[in-house]
Image 1 (cartoon, rainbow, N blue to C red):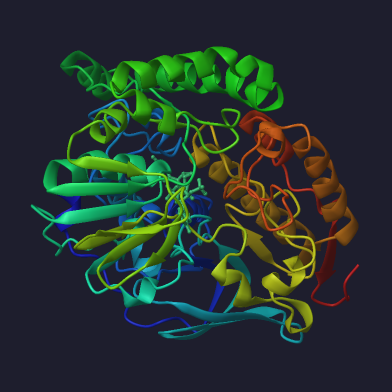
Image 2: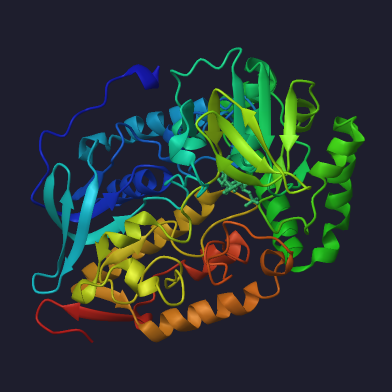
Length: 508
Ligand code: N01
């Protein structure tokens, strides 16, 4: 299969490329393929992992699967007739990405096991100087496809470093750990945890699930595609596009409105409550898992096996707050003020990622050595059109600030950003531009408008805290309108919003 074929190796890093891309998930890989299709071969993808796939390479935990329908989870230019189910398991998505990379013939431009240590704008030579673990490369343009959910965040719980059993993050699963017959704990009840818990419940002798906030969980309408459907996807061009369009427009029509009108949540909340009641027999457990915030405030989850797993005799849902992690287990603070330790052999932390404080932001330096983290320190992450940043010439961030999705596929957003980047290159070529960077006022106007809209959404008003919000309570991660609107706004590159320079003249 595609997964078993060795990857072609790049003999050495080139000294200079026109476009340097960081990361090879949907964002980096999509950018590389589209660049090549546009006739641009002078690019390099640096990837710190040993393969393509991004989050779909890294998240190999048991039960890992997509909660966005398969039909929406492929590039529009590389549909996948091989999906086996309506919601794809992780190995299929990873395999799709590996196959797509191979078939596009771009892998000879990839450098794997290559970590970016530092990327700095050299104002004199007008290039990005990128220091990697495999050497230094200069590039006219720098594209970050490093992802918004790629750096695991360990919980800041006292004593975590003292734990003597096995401990790992959901996104860095330790497959050498034999969990059969072990006492296991999971901290977290987000999208990752609810997929992991049912699988762990099958293996562990005892499982404790530590819940801080009860999430909303709706039924998962997952099913295997029939033989007729699969044959149809292969043989009838257009059938898959029809499926895709149907699912896509259904979501586009409904979900963005739901984020603005919490009253419209009444029906989906009822469906989720019924789901909870049907799945759990124990009234005390039902009470504990009943969400206390408006649906959609955190990511909406879907699962058919999480609630039944919690309802099993050997699984305990612990809602008392964690006081500390000890060498042998987890100690909680009980309602009466005493503490209680539950002993475990293995601890799985499914506590999410660095989202509004991306580690890579400390390593990308624009004008005057200012890092992205410096630029974002005061008011949080922001970009122009989620893609370019004032003070960072010739820099594009695919999956940048306020581009995330709560209801549909990121791939649609990613393709909109890639199209914008390609159009920027076209404009640079046509006008002989050497540099471009968004005007600070254009960026400010864009973000003021977004933040004004955010104030009325369920993410801000729904009564929960989530990874969508930064330390100032601002949502700097999600796109608050439809993906169709995003595509329209990024349809063509808009040089009027940019400071540009040509080889002979200075910035204008
Ligand atoms: O992470 P999360 P995730 N003590 O941040 C809890 C995508 N994704 O990996 O809710 C105790 O959502 C925290 O509690 P609370 C998807 O976009 C997609 O699950 O903050 N608990 C929460 O329960 C998703 O949204 C798929 O009170 C602590 C959990 O840990 C995003 O990735 C699958 C804690 C973290 O939840 C992240 O999901 C999986 C502490 N100190 C993920 N710190 C698909 O299917 C945190 N928690 C496509």
